[in-house]
Each structure stands twice: as structure tokens, then as C-alpha cells.
Image 1 (cartoon, one colour):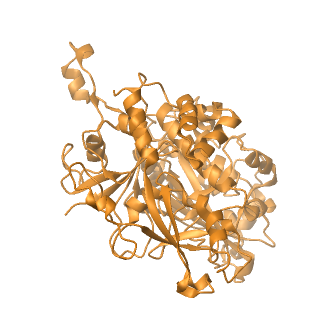
Image 2: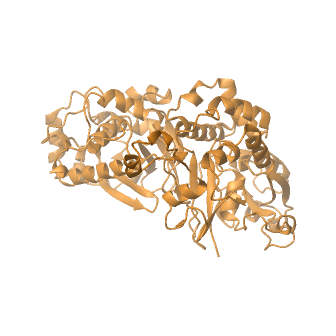
Image 3: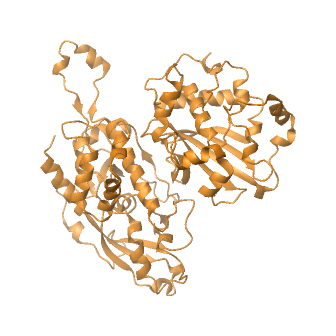
Length: 237
Length: 322
């Protein structure tokens, strides 16, 4: 059944681009898969994932909170890195503290990620905002680099690397200011990574999210890959 | 396809379009509260509001309660709604002011009959400038050297370029001088320089665009407190692809079939079939561009070549009828 496997038979009509229909299909499939997991990416701090339907389109919203003091981003394990330590993962999974939202909101960063299909570039784009606790005013680019971007990607993103630089602009659906990873290089990057094999819409989304997520410490729950023969996109890091 | 000369004469008219603006300092920031004299200017429709900020900061300097505010702290509102500075002022007016668009055959008196003392008259357009309390939830902040505006403009140019060609190589291939020259030419309303640089970016007349850079701004619900805009964008090719049925029926004479030209009407019908049930006649709503009703029969590629904003985009505002 298509909903149970990343390797469903659908392949993409306009690879390395995604049509709106393929994007929405991929979002539904991905959400179904996440919802089958026992816990929601404990080590990545995911607090929710949902689809948002607006009159002008559909997007996928991932909310996440991280602590800025003890759990600094360097301690988290990037998805796709070669040296995932299973033992360490189990400690996180068995540790109920890891799933409890910190009560001291000043040490807690709330990150909202919206995955939107760019109607211009026909590829997914990650929009995100960063807030401290419940403060309404979003944090700036310095805090993005301080708390979200792992050191090994800082230079690449500042120099506008393979995934394009981090830009500040308007969320195409809500019209509110947000950071986004510029999509102008995404199609080329996807072509290089996934050209050898046929990818389904969901595989496209997962590969893309792994690639862009790496750069913002948005790590996919590794349980996503535990039971499937889904190939982790090695060497993306 | 119209000739280059015709397209240029329309483009010149677009670039010559101006709006009378009456800009007041927000009373809460003024030593004279609401007794501050307003700033009046006839401002190009294709220009952007922040370019006025240095002049406004100087004009209101003696009235400002906070003498430390900078020009780039400035932002504009209309009837309490913060205005997105990355949109040209003519588009903002068409979106928010509620003025009826000019159309062929309509009386000319509306254009000239504006009244500065009559608050119900849509012209001059009455805006408020603020130099503090930046609305972070609504607007991206500006910087002192104008890089934020420059980058927003170039990003927009890049998107238009990608749609026209299917790659973003055009804008990348511009020299550094030309790419900053493009933004300068729009700011300074220097049409000859703009045409020279945009001719490097645009495919020649005989070579059709891959897709049309067009965004449709939907009408804002009346009295909605939310300033969020509803924008529709989807790939629109300059010719309507033959449907597979039509193609299979015409296998013998395929070479004689010419694809149908995409018009404003066919594009709106395909994007918004409920608002535009007819491809030829506006029934429920009409498309507005540069303050005028656009003919439904106008080919979209000709419209974008002649009447795009400085960033290469057609921004069409939908206005409900009746």
C-alpha cells in the first residue's frame, strides 16, 4: 500500500521539480508516516507536525522547541551523518525528561518551520521563525547562526552554498516575515543527489528535508528509517 | 506580437504614471500631535515607498518627539494597515485605496477631480509615516545602507527571470554593475538605462517566454482587520498547450495547428474559474493593472513585456464588480 512505503510506485513527472499535486501528495504521505511513529522525534525536539490548508495552497508545519543552555545544537545528531550512535539514541528515547517541555521558557527557543512549494521555482522551500519562549518578537539572523546552523554549514550558507543562502522575506501564505533557505539552487542539488534512481514524491520530500534540515539542525526522527528499507541519503552533510 | 515601438510606448506611459500622495506623521510621534503639516508629492507609481524616507525624515525632523530615530526606521500605513514596502506604491494603491480603475470610455473627470480637502476623495492617497514601533509581525526591517531593499528587489527579478527562462542563469550572468544598475534605474526612473539592462535579461521578441511572471492579488474582504494579502501564482505559459484530445484528433494536420494565445482572460479563467467564469468578459470581477482595467483579450506576454513593474512582474489586482 502506498501509504506504508516510501518506495511507492509513483514517480515524478517534472523531476527535479515538484508539481503542486505531487507536493501535496508527498506531504500527506510524510505526515502519515510520522504519525505512525511512537514518539515524535524526541531527540530533535519536534513538538508537532501538521498540514495547514489555506485558500491559496497547502503547507506542512513542523514546530520544534530546543533549549539554549544545556542542549546546545552541537550536541544534537544531524540526520544523515554517518556516525549515528544507536546507544545514545536509546538513552534519549528512554529518558522521559527529553520529551517534557522545559518550564523555564527563557531558555527555550520555539522554532516554526513551514514547508511550502515555491510557485516560481517549483521546489519545496523551508520558511522558519525563531522565538525565545513566548516572546512575540522573532529573533534575528545572528541567533539563527548561533542556535540553529551547525558550524560546518555556517560558511557555506553565508557564502550562498549548494542550498542557497538564508534570506529574510515574506512567507508566501501568511504574508508575515520569515527566514527561508533560498530555493534557487534546490533543483540542481536534487538533480545531483537523486538523478540515478527514480524517486517518489515522498522520497523527494524526505531527501530534500534531510538536506535542508541538516543545515538548520532540523533532524528527521531517525525512527523514520528504522523499519523501512529507505536509503538514508548518505554524504549529504 | 506587437512591435517593439508599440511596447515601448506603453512602457513609457506606465513609467510616467504618478500618484499624488499626502503623507502625515503619525500623531503619537509628533510634538504637534495631529497639527503637523503633511508632506505632499506626486510620486511614480512604479516606485517604492522607502525611497521617500530620507526626505520624510528631514521634513518631519522638527516635529519628531524622538530625535534619534533614523530614516530606515520609517514605515507606512494606510487606515491602520502597515504597507508592505517591497510592493510598488501603485500596486499598493490599487489594492487598498478602493478607487475605481480607469477604463476606456469612462469620463476623464475622475482623474482630475481629486480634492485635497475632501477626505472621501481617494486622491491624494493619504498615508501615515511612522519612525518607531516597527511592526515586526508584518514587515521585514530595513537597514541604513539600503541592502535589504536591494536584495528584495533582486530576488524578485531573479524569480521573474526563472519563470521566463526556466533557469536563473540570466540574472546570474549580469555584470555586477548591471545588476546594481537595474535597481538604480528603477529608483531613479531612468527608463533608457532600465531598457538597456532588461534587454539583456528578456528573451528577444520572436522567442516566447517559458512562463509569464504574473501574480494575482485577490480582493481583501471588507473590514478585515488582517492585512495579509491573498496572492495566487501558478505557472502560466504564453500559449495555451493543446489538450491531448485536440492533439490526437489533429495528428494529420498537427503542423497547421497553432497554439492559442494566452490572454489575461484565459489566464484568469484557468487560475480563478469561480471569479472569472468567462474568458472574454469580466462578469463578477475585473483585473486592474497600473490603475486601469486590463482588457481580457490582451495577450499576457505582450502585457508583461510592456507593462511589468521594474522587477519584471505583472501584479494584477482583482476588483469585484457591482
